[in-house]
Image (cartoon, rainbow, N blue to C red; front, top):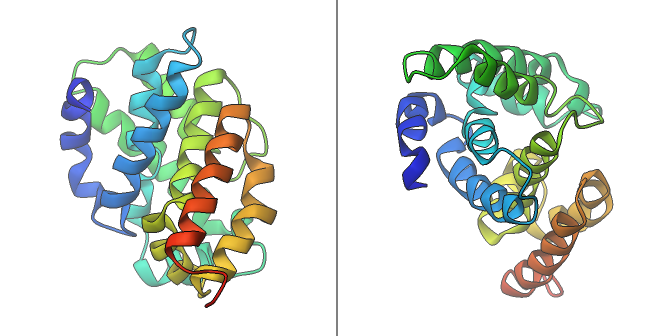
Length: 195
């Protein structure tokens, strides 16, 4: 994280919602690990993309985030999902420009942020890495603990949902392997076979 701490610090105030101050560092770890398998990927775009992908939630009322963005049947296509993406695009430029990043770089990051939750396809290898890392944190004990509350499910119910609903959304074979490995460990630690 040291190489990208300046981006994280600049975005810090936007992470004090929806537990993004936990979600982002864990997702960053996964993104950098995935990037190791894809040497042609621009690691700096990946780093900025994963750090900034969810900052748009800052602009949305927290009750609406959970009621409309997580607890409806078609939550991935809810208005607040699109709004957090468009706000993330706007805020990412406000963060990256003062840090001296070029407009080309900012555009690449914005392309990832725009549609990272609502679009069914990735536009680049960097986009694939960010989209998968955004989901992989959910397979950790921390991710299950937080996200099961968002979706009003028990940890056991949420773990089952990860396998049926989230693993099929992953793009990269390394991501699928990480998800399944982490899920086994998380289910064991949370005693999902019992409670």
